[in-house]
Image (cartoon, rainbow, N blue to C red; front, top):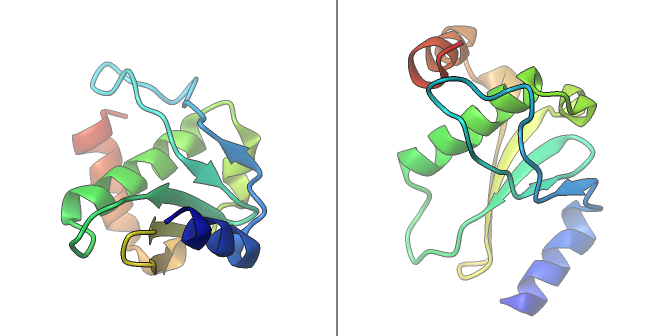
Length: 115
């Protein structure tokens, strides 16, 4: 899995930020959390599972994106995609943020995060 991850970063990297938090983006509802990786245009989460991504993983990644956009970190302004990489299965899953309906982003912002 280590070699797969290294190969993944050769193709999708470089990493611009890792192990980050969301200062300025937390709310009374979500007051902690940290992301895995940012590249130039993608927010990445690594999941080591025998299964395809679960809805809770994709929700978590979208929540991190929204919180990042509210945070003090300017790097989130260039994020155009959300991605999950599973080194166990050696699979990459991505979605363009433009493909996510604004109504979904608005509902998650209000109902899940509490903005």
